[in-house]
Length: 72
Image (cartoon, rainbow, N blue to C red; front, side, top):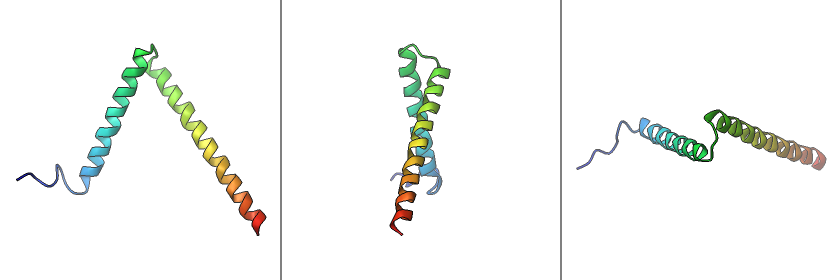
């Protein structure tokens, strides 16, 4: 019979998420190096993309808030 949890009921999901994130980081880093980019360039690209997403979501929130005010 196998154990129901690797570590504990509360920590197993956190552990699994951290393993998944680490695997993604390693894969992305390897693929970027194959393309000839440095780790620093990859990090800058990630920061730029995150900023674009955050700005876009902020604009959508402003548009939605503006439409609510116009409906009142």
